[in-house]
Length: 159
Image 1 (cartoon, rainbow, N blue to C red):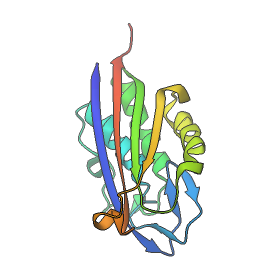
Image 2: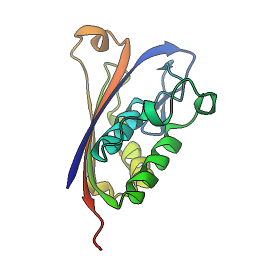
Image 3: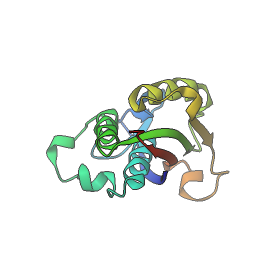
């Protein structure tokens, strides 16, 4: 068995779509970044790569590479999932937390779980996505950004 943990944070800015877990969230503010800046998928990608001891998303998809400008993070995680299978592992479960003072994310969580199930090839009963506020503390509490944590468990393929 292997465990991976991932973390990401991005600043909120006007004029960009807010995409979390591959789902567009109604908001005047979006996340700043080279790709679509989906903090949840970035944390998940890092957790998956970490479980395989393969570094992080920045090593595989550097923000200095123009091929990844504006790319959907769903595509990045699809590539990482191919790596999981190439290394003869199966994703068992995923637990994740979004930290956002605003907007209110609870109504979007079922849709995010469905989207994650599709991209990860995992039953929704094995996916947890929670939304928390920062209780008005620090930069996240002032709604300057959104952060995400993810933990995954993998098992080797049965031969």
